[in-house]
Length: 347
Ligand SMILES: *Cc1c(COP(=O)(O)O)cnc(C)c1O
Image (cartoon, rainbow, N blue to C red; front, side):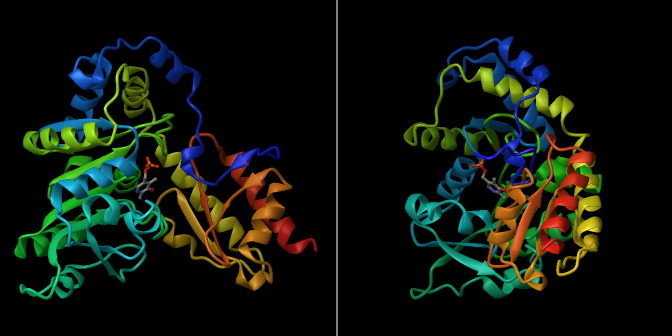
């Protein structure tokens, strides 16, 4: 691989810091499947408390949190209402069909955010012909919507609409803590209306692996059987869970820096001829921009940026995603913006 100095491909590209590695090395461990790993138990208690739910379960990935949550809520043929940009639709290998056997009803929201009216309009009539509307899923922040933060009011009105129809609620909180830092709203307030929710440790929080699913005690007890069936039950997992506890103590407030870096990058690149985006739309650590006006494709630009040691994520013919995180600083973002200017204009 070429020498990548500024990796904006995703906030999954972070490496554990020396202090995080130290916390991992010193973690007390036990058999996680038997509930005997003190570091996993501590992480679960911390996240349950933070998200305001009775119980939590440590899992290898956010994808497994989503897939298990869908299994908890849906039977085959049930329908999940979510935005058309949802990770469960775009990036989980068709998992909702494979595991829960769920149908998906995609909504055309605005940058990943839909409304109570959208939910009312999507709920099926009862009857033998239609699938059973079962679950509303919300992504906080919306990844492919551009890191958009769901305002608390929007969450509450969508949740009310779901409840009016007797639907369950699931939050994909891969970047929930980014939303918390950007909005000042406590995590538990965002999560309050949801039956299940989870937070990713391996995105902006900077852990090597892991995610934590929360819900009622009864829900998490049922989730354990799916975790076992899927082979997600672990042994001395405290080694990685300790990274999560460390990250929640030390890597949350600093997400504000990632947001500042994303905004500053957006403000710099909008000045480049042929690049279009609205810097005001950058809520958190994700910047989507369009390169159609440059005459180059997203892949071309991605390729040329690699030559400057900068990696971004081409997401379509002319769309690119850049994601900030704790392994890139302001100087790195300035260098990335300068590299983009040079690949677009020095031709
Ligand atoms: C990354 C991501 C996931 C999946 O999380 P993994 O830990 O990578 O499996 C799910 N939803 C969203 C919105 C994500 O960004």
